[in-house]
Length: 339
Ligand SMILES: NC(=O)c1ccc[n+]([C@@H]2O[C@H](COP(=O)([O-])OP(=O)(O)OC[C@H]3O[C@@H](n4cnc5c(N)ncnc54)[C@H](O)[C@@H]3O)[C@@H](O)[C@H]2O)c1
Image 1 (cartoon, helix red, strand yellow):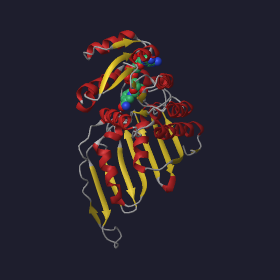
Image 2: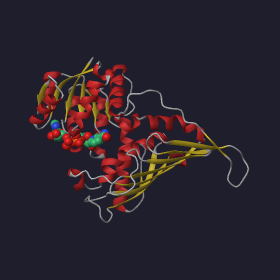
Image 3: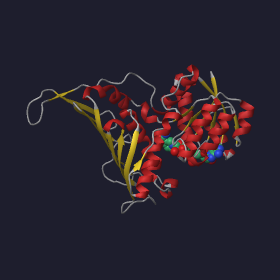
Image 4: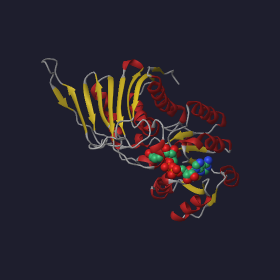
């Protein structure tokens, strides 16, 4: 049984605490011993809501001194992340952070180095990797030959209110990290450059960057296009986006949920070559979403193996976000150096 302190008791913490209590593998593997929030009343009310008899506090360092947990769950706002992760690693804890991994590339790089020096794991919640749909796509990729292109559409008319309405680069910074990370996992190569454009369309209820288009080059000549908007009313895609994945021998279409079709070439004559449908088997049973990432992290800590979403790799998805912002800002293509 590992002990954990959770820091940042805002909106996201409800889902975490529910998963930790209700998913059997987590309930038997992790015991939360402390809740921390800058606002002590928030930490206390979260403990009360989830019937937790745990320490509460507003000072992470003091909590870690007192509790000496194996794990720290970091759910603070992005601007506070780097300091929180450093403090947790310095106290000998393994850290699982909410996305995004950091507020800047320099911060993210420093966290990778810091975790290595501390000899502790730092991983990031990329919950989209822990859904049956993307697992089925990953398993089906060999059916379409060599991967050449991935085209992704994300269109959701989302009225959050709150901080997102005032953010710069809102779509790329707050949402595209999920889609870019999923694309990078599917493509399984390094991104090498991007041309991107951001707009804030007429009628947008956001201050900046509610829509974006990006064209990424990956190693090996694989391309990825992204068209996205958070102010497109009328025909929402899934939160996981809508995908066209093209290989040398066929195409997979994925609606982001359970709708997956795959066709591959079944003959070498005719203007349109004959196609055969390929059945895509269901994913093996799995713990999904946030709970899946937390469980993967727990297993990694127990076995001292890298988790799927470790920071040293996740920084490459964050690099896609910042390269896209850089390109959209400069109006020119941004080259990406391998990380
Ligand atoms: N993975 C997902 O699908 C997903 C979805 C939504 C949000 N998120 C991410 O989760 C994180 C938290 O989002 P939220 O919606 O819960 O935000 P929130 O604003 O509701 O809560 C953040 C909490 O952190 C506390 N906090 C800030 N700085 C702190 C510090 N230095 N020490 C202790 N507490 C501190 C605040 O007081 C607040 O209670 C963000 O990084 C966000 O991007 C992830």
